[in-house]
Length: 329
Image 1: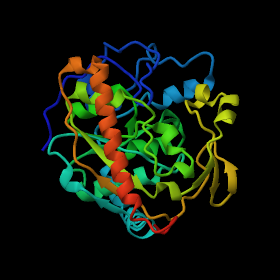
Image 2 (image 1 turned 120 degrees about the vertical axis):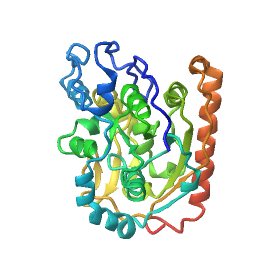
Image 3 (image 1 turned 60 degrees about the horizontal axis):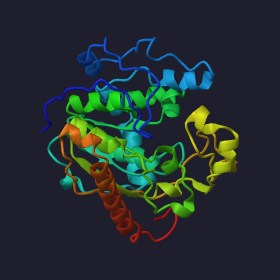
Image 4 (image 1 turned 135 degrees about the vertical axis):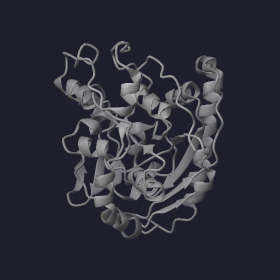
């Protein structure tokens, strides 16, 4: 069912913004060990920035990761709760399974709901429910989420890995699928008025990753997550004033209407998602040239980026046409 393992390039780029993590490649680590074990990074190559203790905390949050997959015991223990969440609370519709290639693939989507992107969570939960660990999907998460006490460990237990090149490459090399939301925080925290806009943030790193890993891209269309909490304003000027891009790698300080605190500035997860109806649809795969030289071909990369973006937008428009109103969908 899965493609054979591929060589892991010596690099560590952050897939949300294509920026280097600020340390040279670790050439001393056995890459096979990376695939099967939690990885303690060399402190010399993951040294926190002196200028910011918070930046150091975020870096430490991604120092350990694994591509072993989900904690099966925990997934089984929580299965009844997730069945309720999927079937009764969010009334999830997940379609398009027939489009999945037999080989390991890169799923690319959009997500909403600020810090608690329930459309992304429901996609991964439906995947587990369908394949029961026989086909492993890794979600990817922002550094801030991976670093949060409690949240970060739970993310690791359900198979989430940091959204950076080293971890994603290792997952593909292990023959696993990976889902990436390139738009990151500018996507998840976009205002409700932009709820049907596909925001990939102009971040093309996922195309280059697919080329280097030799995997097809599978777009995923999603609607409904934007109704789990209402983003009234992105407050970009405030985020700039608070230097959130430097501190939290975020350009947005979302002003939300959520439960139970009403209107609030959400600097961290502090709402209970509304029971909005969520629809996810897996779309037809987009073939990517596996010639490594293509990764340096900006024209080709931009062409494929626009192709993925257009496919998701078309899918979102179609799903949006089925909605009857906020929350109840």
